Length: 373
Image (cartoon, rainbow, N blue to C red; front, top):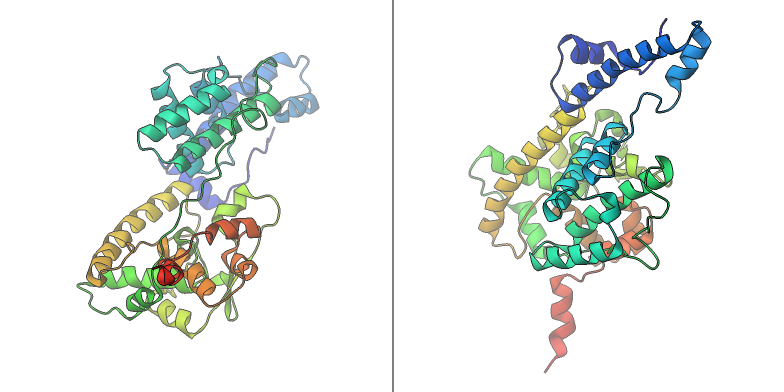
């Protein structure tokens, strides 16, 4: 019998099963496929007399081969969640693992039923007193909430008597947006005009920052995977990688006009021999390869941007992430409406943009306080 379990290309098959690639995604896929063998053997023994139709129905029945976590230990539930949700990204898996380690360190052997609104408040106070940011605490709590919802509503494992710790009457996760210090207009101009490079790496770093800034404040994660096929006439049209799995509705296509300034910096960085604009990725890349490449390049580029930042004596350290802030702030300074800025950034609604632009830049504060005696 032939049983379809996934669609992959010949090249992917060669990479995963013949060359036995050791990246995390390939290992997980091989392991998943191998786990189907004992499942089929058990089904074969159970279906007497053997019937192909019953066999197929049993094989494809949801979660028929999955054993529930052996306990309500948080680490068991998180391990189960990561294993049985193949659509979640590698970075998300790593983040859940970090949450598990943080909680285990705080309370060894922690069970999901130990997570109450009181526990969350105490944990928050403790971590903030240790210098951990509110945003970091909130990110761990969102992971806990997702685990609790999953094992309450989908895999109904948590006892019905368990008191849900989040929301009305319980703990409310902070929607924390840290204030942003942004570069002054003349500082952005100095970056654009900077030419005192010590080597090619510094020039490349500045040009990448400039590409990010001029390309609607695109994230480096999206620039790295931007392809020539995303170029439609005089525009780049793409979706943000961040929203592809986190947002089900209102997924916006970002349209970046390729004006002369963007064209100028693009011509310095482009690779016409690659399907990717920067030429740093290859087709059929695994998620692990992508994350490793992105992380390595970010470190190198930010290191060189730091040198440029010191040379220019900038009021805010120059990093790749600041290109997006500078793009939004430049539009704001030029009188562009909040809704238009949000549209150019690819925000789902104006509330996100409002928080994004919620802080005033330094030039605003100087002007406001200029009349103080």
